[in-house]
Length: 216
Image 1: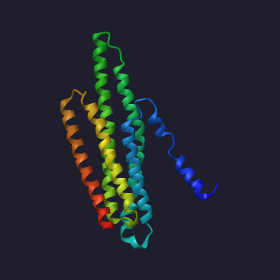
Image 2: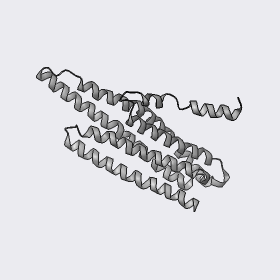
Image 3: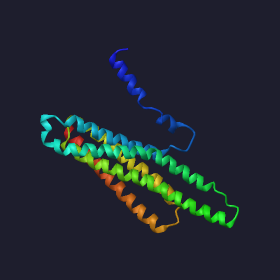
Image 4: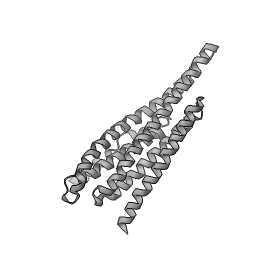
């Protein structure tokens, strides 16, 4: 097999089992895990552009900053990778709480409390996904200005993925908030999520505008 063919095969096989797991007839991993994975890919594209910029004389002025940004993206990507599994686990936790016995008053009360705890965790995980993906997006916005201009389209793809991660995570936040009884928690979380969505839209649009300006 030729080297290009081997590379092509390796890339095809690199998708791994995650897509297959999502495709199975089980509720998890689902949209929340996919949102986290989008955040991982966004962080990876940011690291790639850092690597394509660092060491290039043309972008020497950017090197010091990108040497700081690159490990930040690496850490964000690693944590988002962990959240892929944590999101699936939090969903299973909610299902487990709903399956608890409710034959007696005591059981019913314990079940209700367990459900609320599980729901709050099921909100906390995608909320963290959204927050970390927003951090990735902010760094991508910076890279769009100081990184290798030949890879600006890759930054733009990363920005769109990061925005998708924020928006996708927000769906899981919202669906679980609907069943949480702590109204103060619900209100504060919704406000935070709305702010993240709006900021992600603004920054992704800025990166796209930067790309369009380069093409003009």
